[in-house]
Picture: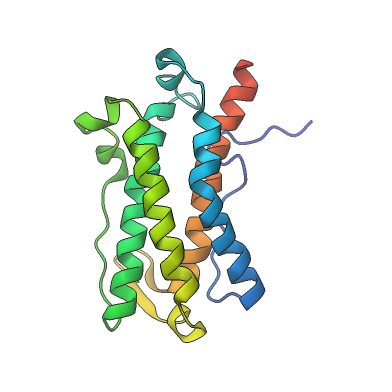
Length: 175
């Protein structure tokens, strides 16, 4: 039996430059479903379970629950900049440090609600974009020029990636 890498339970992200309309719509549907899917994944977990790392040396479920909206807020802003500026240079952030700020030890309800509201607004933006909009570029300090299509693919993967961290842990632990 092949062992799944607990860091990448659905596999590593494979970058794409552009998406077909059907694939783009499927990825947007994944983003639309991400908040509810993540909420279901963490549903019913107690504090001890939330404070369990999803893998050895990894973040706790609670940190992941706060990380996903942090990350997706950054993604949303990257789309807004990409749509309103010519090839904007976007700012990166230190995810590992953000996962240690004080609110990441707080209850997760506010972060789940934030994720839900953010995704509602973000999906409205995405569904209103034209094919030419998705071809627009942003400049990432580490990755170089990337299209908004690339970001759609990345963040559709990202939501499923972190949801799988939680569901795989639950399965391993029998929760």
